[in-house]
Amino acid sequence: MKFIDEAKIFVKSGDGGDGCLSFRREKYIEFGGPDGGNGGKGGDILVEGIKSLNTLVDYRFKKHFKAQKGRSGSGRNRTGASGKDLVLKLPIGTEIIIDGNIIADITSQNKVVLFPGGKGGLGNINFKSSTNRAPRKTTPGEKGHETELLLKLKILADIGLVGFPNAGKSSLLRKVSAAKPKVADYPFTTLNPKLGVLRKNDDEVVIADIPGLIEDAHKGNGLGIQFLKHIERCHSIVHVIDITLDNLVEAYDTIVQELEKYDSKINKKNNVIVLNKIDLLSDNEIEKKKKQLEKNLKNEIYPISTITGKGIEDLSNKILSFGRKNENWRYKKNSS
Figure: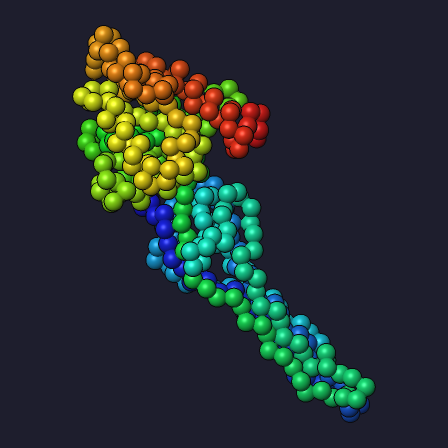
C-alpha cells in the first residue's frame, strides 16, 4: 500500500432538517391546531483512530466528505429522522489542521465528534400561543459546519532509527522486531517509515525506521525532510552508523546537524550510537573505530552486527531501558 502522510480534504456536517408547517386535520374536527414537527438533527463529523492503519492513502483521491442531512419534520408532531453521522477513520498519530492550527491530534483509538451536525428547525406547533392559535411560522434547519482540513500523519513510535542511507537501519529493525522491511545494498532502500515492535518479557517499545538522511536533507536533498516529522514524537533516538566509513565523527555530526536544522528539540532526546557491520572488521579495527568516537563524543556506543547478531542483546536492553525511564512511555510493564 502506498504511504501517504499528508492529505487535504473538505468536510461538512449535516444540515438540520426543516421544521414542518402542518395543522391537525381529522374528521369532525374542523379547526385542528398546529401539529408540525421539528426537523431532525444533521449528522456529525467524527474522527476515529485506527491502530491498524498507517497511511492516509484513503484520502488521496476522495476529497469531499459530507454527513447526512436531517429529515424535515412532519404532521402529527413527528420529528424528522436525524442524519447519519460520518466517521473519518484515521491512523493513530494524525494531526488535523485548519489554517495552520492543530484542532485535533489522534493519539488513541477513541471516537470523537469533530463537527456536530446542525440542529433541526422548529415546526409550527412550537409557536402556538393564546393569541395565535394557528401559527404559520416555522424555522429552517441549522446549517452544518463546512471547512477544509489538512491531515498530517506523524507516526507514533518510542524509538527513532536515524542515519545515512545504507547504514543498516532496516536490518536492525528486522533483527530486533517482527517487522520485515525491504533490505538491499543500495541507498534509499527505505522510501517511507517502517514500524517494528521490540518485545522482551512484559516490556515493549515501538521502533520507527526513518528513511536515510544525507547532508542538506533539511533543504530537500535526497528524500528531504518529508519524513523527519515522524521522529518528533519519539522519546529516544538511535543513531545507526556504518562502522566501515572513514570518518565516523563526521558522519555522526552531519546527521546531528540536519536534525538540529529541522528541530533543535530532537537532539535533546535520549540517544545512543550504534556502529553496525562489525562483522566486516577485525576486533582491533572495531576497537580503534570505537575509541575514535569516544574521544570526541560522550554518547554510549554499541558495536553490533545485524548479520551475526553480535551486540544485539545489549542494544535491545538499552532501548527498552529508554522506555522505562520515559514518564510518558505508552507501553508500561504489565499493561494490556
